[in-house]
Image (cartoon, rainbow, N blue to C red):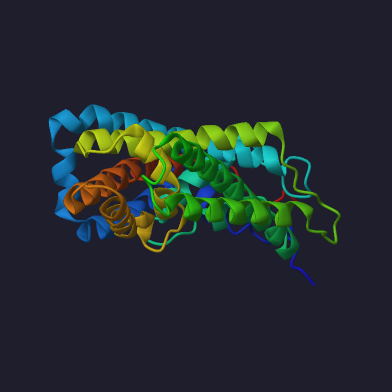
Length: 305
């Protein structure tokens, strides 16, 4: 039997999202410890990039787009789960959970798990919520793939070699995953719907990510055209999708170096610097947004007696 939340049982996220200012200060102290741990292992090159005054406009714009992308993701997901047999939370509260998750992601990738538990009463809810997040990610991957395929079609024939076929395969896989989740029968009869709104928000979210990549490209001064960047977008997006390390640091830089090295004349150092620039943008959003989110008092998730 699934364990139900009762007035006597605290919601798993209560300690992270509720209580007063004293609790917020304790959470902020824990967040500071997490940040100190991350900075202890952060490459000095990250800070060298931030200290270059000419890069500040690119950095500020990229951080703003990163924050906007997270807002769009939460708004889209809230729209997707509306009407499902899940706990319906305010968008602002879900955004708070997302920001706290980004901060914790500096150590361990748990932000999606936090969102799952935020709308769940029991294990059955957790499964449905997890499927909705997977569908959300799959839709975004479909849009990213379409952007890459469109850009590839506008480039000279043969300029990208095997890349269009790989992008086509990744896009087809994302479509298949989306269809499977969308049409999978569930004991509760719940149906995960794809609406024009969710597709539009997925498109805006993808454009935000691509915009962050473009800003980093301009800041580093790598010799790659905007059309080429859009064509390789799906491969670079893999570093954003798969979080094997805290906030993707290290993996992102390796992916950028491999992709640019294989498909362009961009030096590996420039590609790595581009990845570091994006990591620094995400670090700022995680620290600023997540720090504020854990500090502010919030309401309890446990039902009142």
